[in-house]
Length: 184
Image (cartoon, rainbow, N blue to C red; front, side, top):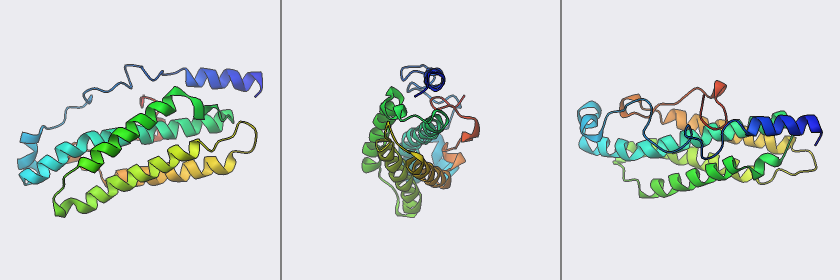
């Protein structure tokens, strides 16, 4: 990799570290209704319990998709496979695995099975993108893999968008201006 590209890569990856306060777990910036407030809003206690249990999964997947999009852009801009070794990608993998455990434990009313299917599909496609990052090679043409990551991230985003339910506090962000770590 040329010195100029190496400098660009290092500058872009240094925007946010994995331990950055902006990407650390915590309460959402926008207050969302609690489970007691959701029941009247959503029409039933079962739906409210599902929405409350689904919110951390949705938040994890939203962050994973945003990070994957940012890392993909970084890899494309720098024409570097070094993205596959970044701590941010490992942080993304951990968050994805946490979402996996929550999805497995998610109880849902039968009427909300289609919503859960969208969450499961978003998780699956983001997992495929994570796996494709491992296929990036330090020497060689990564264009096909980056195109595949792009398609997988777009599919994950589309499924997560389909699972948006603003009343339940499940809202998407616009990824067009997001950095790879915090969306700012």
